[in-house]
Length: 571
Image (tube, rainbow, N blue to C red; front, side, top):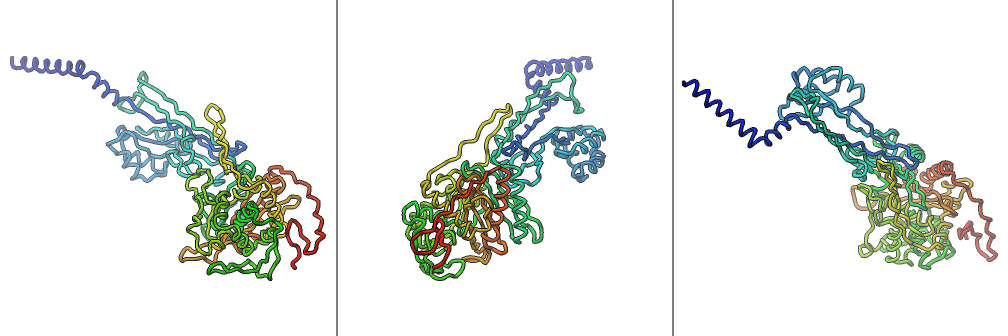
C-alpha cells in the first residue's frame, strides 16, 4: 500500500510537471531547446577593392580559412593542443587554455591561415575543430602607395588611410548562417538551416595612376639616397582637374638603409615651412592688386632690416636694379619683402588663404593638417618680412602644389581629389562629388605669373628642372627647419621644387620635397627630381610638346636686354 501511494504521488507529480512544461511553459522550453541546438555564424562580407584610375588593383580581398573550436565538444584539449601547435605555429599552452575553456562554445585558434595550413589541420581530424571562411586583405603591389591606402585590421576593419576614411563603403554588410546541430557539434540533416548572405562592399576607384605612382616612389627613393636625406615627399597632379596622379612618401628609418613608406601620409599629415615657393602667392597678390607689374623695377640690396631682424638673399650681391620678374627668378628675399610691404599685412594674409595655404584641402584624409598660419593680429614685427618668403608659416605638400595649380589653371583654385568614383556590387558607377573651385586671381595675372615662373626655370634658380622640348614653370624653395629643442631655427633644411608643364597649356604639375638633403638647395637637389618625374610623366601620359614661341625682340630703349622681364645682364 505504501509503495502504491508513493508510485501514485510520483505519477501525479510527473503529470503535473508535464502539464506545466508542455502546457503553460511550452514556448519557454521550446526556445531553450532551440538555443541549445541552434548556432549563429557570422559571415563576413567581402571588402571592396581599391583600384587605380585605370582599374588596376591596389588592394583586394581574398578568402582564407579561419580555424576555430567548440571547447564543449573537444574530447582531449591537451592532445589537441599538442597536435595543433606545430601546424598553426601557436604556443601549445595558449591553445590548451582556449580548448579547455568552459564558458564559451566558440574560440578562434588561428585567423585567415594559408590553404596549406588549413589542409594540414583538416587531416588531423580532431573533434570540435572547425573552419570558417573569412576575407583577407591583399595588396598585390606590396608597399606601393601604402600610406595612402592605409591598413586593415584582423577583423577586416579600416585602421588608417583610405581604408579607414571609406570604411563604410568598402566594408559591405555581414551575413549570417543559422544551423541546427547535435551535442557533438554536427549538423542535423533535417534541422533548421537559414542563410542571410553577406553583401560585398563597394569598389573604390582612385585618381592615382599605378605606373606613375611606382615611378614616383622609385625616383624619390633614389634621390633621397643620393642626397643622404632623411626622407621626402613627391606629389603629381593634373592641375586642371585637381586629380592626384601620384602621392609618394618615404623615410629613412636607419642610416644606411633604403627609404621605406612611413605609417602616415606625410604629404597631407605633416607640415613644413615652404621657403621661397611661398613667394608666388605674395607676388601674384601684388600683381592682382596693381601694386606692381612684371617690369616694375626697384633697387634691391642683398640685405634688409625689418623690425629687429636682418633678412638676406641667399647669395651676396651689389645693389641691383631688378624687375618684379627678376626678383622671382633670382628668388630674392629682399625684393619679395619690398613687394610684400607694399601689399601690406591684410593683403598678404588674404592671398595666402585664398591660394589654399591655411585650410585643409577638402580631401578629408584621416589626420590631414590644415597648415599653420596665424591671424595678422598675431603677427610679430618681423612677420611682414618672414611670411611672404615662406618662414613663420607651415603647409603640407599638397597645399603648396594646389597653390601652383591655381596659376596653371588660369587663376582658378581647384581642390585636389583622390577618389574618382565608387562601384557597387551591381556594377553601377557612382562618380565622386566634383571638387570645389574658386577664382583667386584673374587670368591675366595668372598668365603673367606663369611667364615669370617659366623664366625662373629658364634663367633663374630652377634651371635644373628644365625638360628639353617643353616649357616648364616652377620655383625652388630652401627653408631652415624650426628647432625641436629650442626657440628659433636649427641648422637643417627642407629643399623643394614645385612647378607645372607645359607652361602654355599645363597638363601635369608636381612638387618634390626633401628632408635634410646634402646639399640643401632646392634648385640643386629637388629640381632635378622634378625634371625626372616630369620627363616620365610626359611619356606615360603622352603629353605633346608645344612649339617654342618666337624670341622676343630686344628693347630699343637703353638698359639691359630682357626676356619676359628677366635681366640677363647686371648694370
